[in-house]
Image 1 (spheres, rainbow, N blue to C red):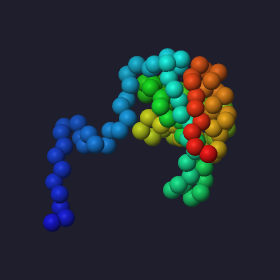
Image 2 (cartoon, rainbow, N blue to C red):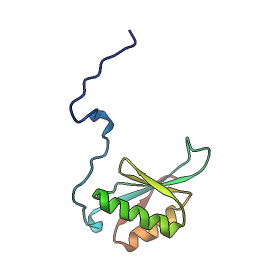
Image 3 (cartoon, one colour):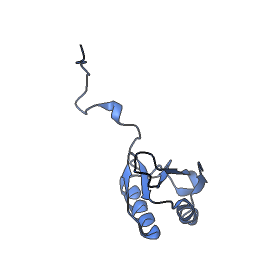
Length: 108
């Protein structure tokens, strides 16, 4: 039998919710942000990932918009992680530090 039954509640499959959505944002001074670079599954093109944000959905969208404008590129938000097209970790780090966040650049 390849057909397996999966139970789900009225709110859908809860396994897909990895990152919680925050209703209230933590102040920047209380957050540690990790910047990653990823290119797998993207045709060899690099993407800068901003992880560890504890922001409400509106604040997350506003920060994403600011980072995209400052870097002059596109991007998106997936599962609470901001994805910025291209290798912009250093620039993103400078922007976030100015805003008061603690930043760590992860990976090579």
